[in-house]
Length: 251
Ligand SMILES: Nc1ncnc2c1ncn2[C@@H]1O[C@H](COP(=O)(O)OP(=O)(O)OP(=O)(O)O)[C@@H](O)[C@H]1O
Image 1 (cartoon, protein in one colour):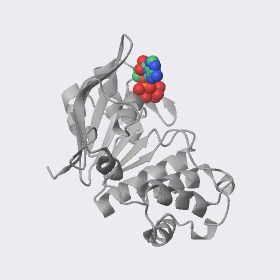
Image 2: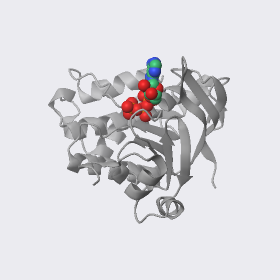
Image 3: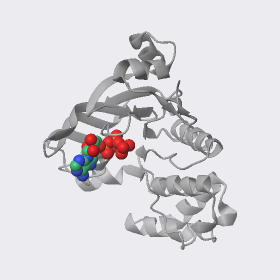
Image 4: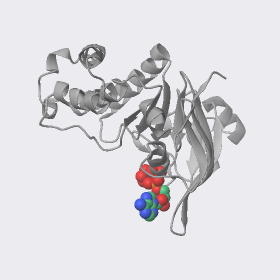
């Protein structure tokens, strides 16, 4: 496998008596799209909070683009782009102003303007650059968040349930867009979701359940291991929970 842009080694995190993550290990290689599939409460958000440095793991180790998050925090976080579950755009600022604010936070200086123009071009929103974010559709707002996360050219993109609240067409478009980015830029992607149909085209799927990593394999291998015809069946077999898709519960 090519060089890992994310390496999580035996990480645990408890809230009081509740073990939200129990010795979870995983990796993401450069140019790899890894789906983190888990039902509500599996520990996905907790893992993302550890990966973004908001919390510190009780035990275990996290490396981003070969930098230890604990000992080389600035370098590790500089290699990271994040799209959170809840939008963090300022709706009253223009698209460009939102991007400029992020560029300043990353100390991008003169490079910022060129990078902002390049990302606006890529997402096809050059004409909306000076419109307030509030005027954009939900799908386009998400694209602005991805563009923002990529401004400083990270090696790893974290997406925490990024399609929540989007209509089916916008969900598909966002997923396809991130798959293209991964292929075109050699970007490592960790995409957390509770929807099985979002992980079908992933290079690898990691199944997280009640804080434990139950499986990590290609979608085909996962079905093979579970002895099922599709991922929904594999998810049910592995977790005992009813799988969900964009359309709702799989019957
Ligand atoms: N700050 C907290 N204090 C106490 N318990 C928490 C806290 N945050 C999460 N938990 C618990 O830890 C477990 C994992 O939650 P987490 O939010 O990481 O899961 P998740 O997979 O992201 O689920 P969801 O999609 O519902 O957010 C759950 O049982 C949750 O109730």
